Image (cartoon, rainbow, N blue to C red; front, side):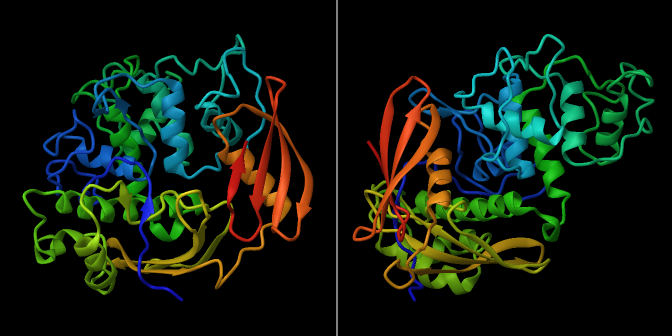
Length: 408
């Protein structure tokens, strides 16, 4: 059994993260994720926490921008909400709306939201994925997504929200749960398009009110991802300081925001001191392949233990990972990251799981159907025909014991 962290190659935006709190008055970080969201930005904590959960992306134009004051499209909102709420984004029905392309990046989030009853289309059989989302529509989506009790209490001070308006009980639910106080003391601005920074803040506040012991599988996976990204962000920032990286003792306090001393002073210290400065390496494979293996070994208010897998790829050998997070005075931190090679613990993936994995992860093609062809026992490999919607066919090889996938 290996306990030292391996280095996994992945291109990513790296961050240092602060504490996960609903208030945004002061960031604990000195590094910014997005060019237009510095640590002094009012919504910095909410935006980068959602980024670490992989719930939001930026816009790349030489540098990465978040565009916090831009309005939110319904497709963008579906991605953000579905991810933070922890919905299954793979097992979704086929919905036929006139303006909803099944190959679009927002199809699965929208379909997942519709499936759960959190989003609905229009009478003209459109979903308007590229249309803007109003604050009233946002209130409905968040209230439904988090199961809030609808109420019209606490909204009489909003001069622009009538008690009999369709959106009044949803706004009341958000106010009741401390998600928003409106755009001023007397206005909610229900018809105004919501901004990206506002939706990030609302989701962050709603998420932080859920006790961790009540998290669903998707939310547990988000917590794991967020912890990994924030640990790696600390290390990547400090090791690139010139003319030379500071001593480990300089970064230790920042690491201890997200990691317990047992791992910070062993594996993380070793990686920080030995890893190269300019390599495109991070500590963890993010995201891990939860759809190949995902076992929650412990899930309490004090500790979370998850076993999952990072499959082989063309650049790195994979591994089985057992990750332990602990609640340290209200902050969730990584305590242990154990790994086993596939030689020590080979996988035994069925062809049904392999087929589903191909469908979920081969996103550069618009897949129609996948047919199993044969199994080569000597190579421990499944072979599939991957039929695309344009009429062409690709071949896929999937190694049963390591999760290695090759499509050609």
